[in-house]
Length: 85
Image (cartoon, rainbow, N blue to C red; front, side):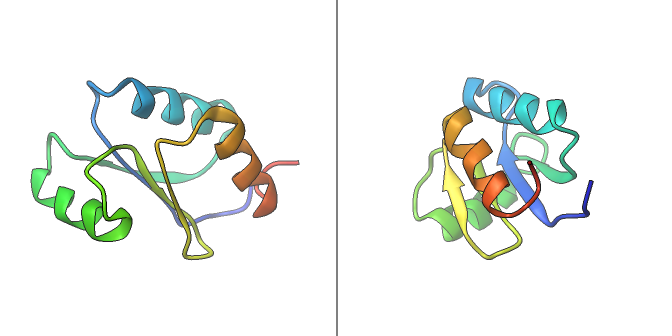
């Protein structure tokens, strides 16, 4: 697996965050998880990236981001980056 600079801003109480983390883990994708419960000050960073308070906010090495992506949307993005086949 190639090293990436994917960051997932989320919270353990968030169903979409849990689902997105599970997808990344299932595909052995390297990512950084920013726990917004443990580090609430990071919520400002997620808001600055997305312009929204929804989570998860997932940033990618190409500078793009997704907010609350479905599994197919997230998988499609990972494929476009060459992270998934």
